[in-house]
Image (cartoon, rainbow, N blue to C red; front, side, top):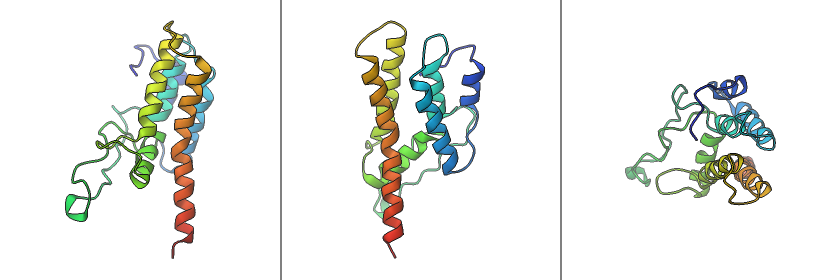
Length: 163
């Protein structure tokens, strides 16, 4: 989503570089979900949600490519898109998608793509282009934000049971 020329203080806070760790990812996700319901054109709400989800690719530390090379049985291509900031819900979504095979061939997780699509539709809704009920857009965005968290919980449980 394009960011406004004059970001609010809330948008600037969301665009700040993420801090390291899983707790930071969950905090960013919680902030994004909390903002969805109150997003309006005037409060830059959709942009704030997108910023909490993605951070600012222009200033953040990017995710390191984690895909195996073709010699190791992998695709041989980078599976992390160059605009993904480390320690964000978007980066977590891509990492879980690689483990659960729920990503596109170019590395974007299905969940991340669906979140950004839903936010673009929500922005259109807020600015006057109604294509679907707002409640449905909100549910779609939130659901796809949570899918990688459930995948992470499954992965953690599996690792606990693996010797």
